[in-house]
Image (cartoon, rainbow over all chains, first blue to last red; front, side):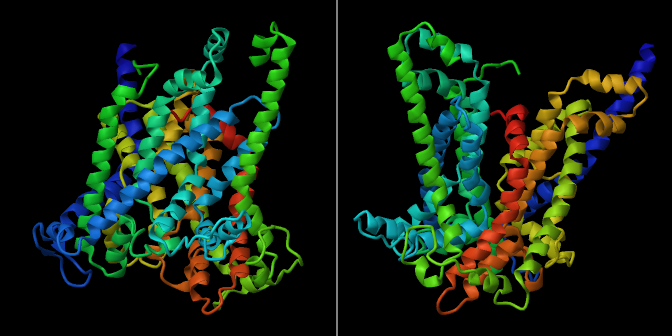
Length: 300
Length: 293
């Protein structure tokens, strides 16, 4: 009997590997190989036509000397992330909180709130955004109607950054759905106990709800940080990196250098710098997480 | 739970609760209106003349005008907008099918079997979830170029054959872990092999997860702009996303905003329809799947 069990186990050992084989092969082709290859490329000069030429760390030196375009682009990217990620999380959590009320017809509201995010990533929306914020677009029309001055959304550097940041915050749906799922997990007994003790709504929110969903806040924070650092569509479609390169985010700069000017080595160096910055920020978040993230089931 | 807590309290308290319910509805409605107004306004704008678009903040058009749809559909190119629509589906449908099958297999492997280095490999799945795509993009382009597959749909689709979207693998693993192993064991006693267990037992139970994967992959793929921008260069192969961008660029002189808006609305339709078809399962699935931090 025991022998047979062992045999079965031995067979199962390979069964699992067979099932994940496609993923494993894909991981080597689509992740591992390009990951290493781009690091190697970043030490070369390569224009897709002649052979890559090894030039040591010249690309990296070039990135941080000269006209400082890349440094400026990184600063713009960080600005964008600082403007969007916290605002998006707070907004998403707030909406998830009110959508978690037990009210009639709440599902209809949930659907309505999710629509902007379903459509948000679509090019159509970026195009429309550009139109809404154009000189005589809807936003300025509304501002004038309520007696304010219209804003040169796409010609003023600060306003342009704000314009693409608002779009990002408006696309809060996926964060919101993940928050909503987490809020549902909180046992209602906890709220009841707090209410019996006479705690105020906002006290309950900050003292019970927020601490319990810190793992979800952390997950959303990391995901949005990684995504935000790589934002491409909005600056490419709405502001074209302008005005005065104020919204020339790193992803856009990498795209132009690689697929427009075919400086493959130089662009690879940029993407590695961006990657290292993202990794550093994520590591800081992970390190800080044991200070503020509370796991109820530590054992798992 | 609220009503229970309140039962014993005074009428005054009850009144307060009714007010707070009312207040919640007002809050929800006001925010929903603000969120959706741009979309409602745009829907209205697609029936307006180009001149009216810039002169009114109301969404209801003075005269319904379908010219924008008719002219927009023709596009400025030799192809109608229908061509771009079909192109998008030529990319999206294979991606969804491949993702469903490859991610189910991979998730099954990770959720149900023990094998050497399993934890390390699953660690790689999670690590790729956070790996910025920007680092792998350039070598992939060079690879597809060397294989002479630029300007085809292969680079857009190939990674889904190999379950290279860790978000979906992770999601399916989470779902599968929630299904008791006794189901598998019972089926094996009945003479099923491991593949039959997946097909006959697990996948039917996993339907909400599969709906989720379909919805997400559909939306992400149809919204994808950067990948086709990099790989697709001939106009007849453009998907909707690139065609819309082109419409905006090539219309010299006065931009026919009403046409672009009309085509944008049409471009959004597949996503909206699919979302409403799947929204109930989608909402339930997200909650059942327990995407946790």
